[in-house]
Image 1 (cartoon, rainbow, N blue to C red):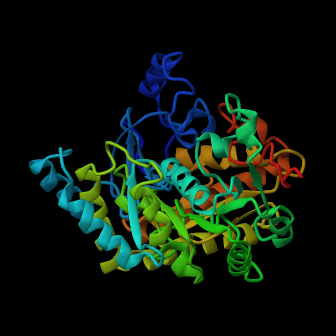
Image 2: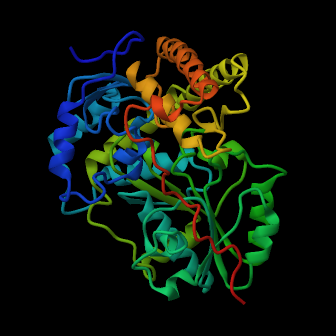
Length: 444
């Protein structure tokens, strides 16, 4: 029988997952189209590799095993899998059509709704992926300011302007790499060391897992304004989760341009660029940012329904409350076991990260053991709590019970010194994000 979400069971049988993995070998480079979904981020040989279906807060793999999910499709699921109000909106629109030869009314209606809830959304533009709108924001900033240089902090997608400052920059011309530099979050000194008269924009994730300190975001905005530089928020994660109006509303800082995707449409592919009308207006004649599928109607219908649910049911507050309970519970368990200095949760409760102390190089091994034992208990987890509205109090009760057992096992492995030998497969590998090849200061 396939595994369910329960404590007393063996590791799941993943025969069909492994068969698909073999078929994909050499056919699909890196196997997954998002690294965070790929086999390197799970204990190879224990974790499922392919999911078949999902509903609410639960998912089922191709072998029929059920899991309580804390990945939420790596961010897009804000309300829950198969959420009726959104799926019904998609079905209704499907009856009328998906793509059309002229503009569809939803393009106007959704833009008006975005303008209502996003602080800086004087103008709105659609695309399909986050990297498209971050790249469009950079192009607009360069066009508006007449400057070339970009400062960034965070992860902003796969396009040349950003990926050139990372270790995976093969294929990016040196001339492109030379135009982009980085700064450290919560470090205004590193900003001021790089900000100069040729800086078109500063683009950053307004928060990942550390909260801004000493009015960092406010000071950053002031520095940009004084320098004639545009401030761009990459709100792929903070948007519609921290608050309905994203980080701009949550922290009370308005950027010139802001970029959204993930949670805005509960799983449908759409990205939104919003911002000042005078900057966005360059698209009318001077800046080219046009895509065939920008106005695709199923995603717009899903966006409209999702935003309304997020607003009417105050979903961001719900995500925060549920996530806070998980984060506090995890930290309380770690404290009771005497391992709080080794592992703890931090970040915004809607998307908290579990930290493992890597002294001695055991961080990934600890994460792997915890993941392995959670999978045995029917919890799909990759080091984060991405909350959705469909997570129930019963889900949280169960998860905390599982954490109690799993963290006790982690403590036992550390005390026995046999952490690696307890793994039943290859451990999790480091995830590529943004930590290599940083150019922290511009060339003079």
